Length: 213
Image (tube, rainbow, N blue to C red; front, side):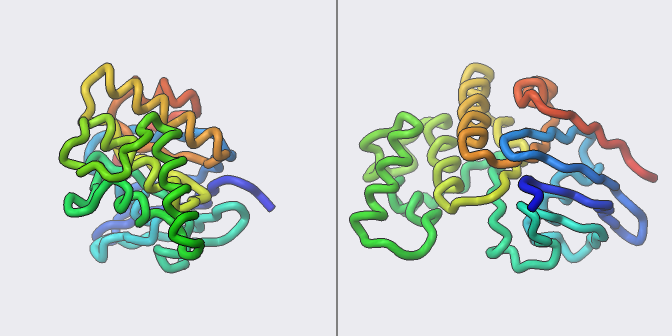
């Protein structure tokens, strides 16, 4: 079984015209960075991989994750995690309750709380489970969003400009944390970014897309 994320002859189409074409394999623990101007279809490619492609786009090709063809699988069964520019934490829930949304079903209440506490400790937020997300800094929110996603036990990770709203010092810190946690879990990572520093920090291959028409 081929571990990792494979895009085989993937073409995104809008209004009958091809927007982008890509064939790549990403090994576990590796990062592929995708750069290119706005409108070239970078985020649309991520939507195709997660099964959330907008109806005004179509796509051909195959998405394989750890040897499984997930091209037509329901979005919730794909085992693909994604981080966006915004942390998307639920404002009406505590930090711990936010993390609980990431947990897969099963286990006792004590087991689930233990996993949440361990996840927070892993990113330096020990004791934050009962905090209101509104009281967190931008970097803390980013770490909570990361751990919520990782608690869902994805087999691959997509990054859609997730560091772009952080200031320079924080950006480097959070970026290093995300890459380290993904590598520790041997996750293949596909990152979309406008920032060459993000791509350089990832340490993997970089694909620069240009309009096909």
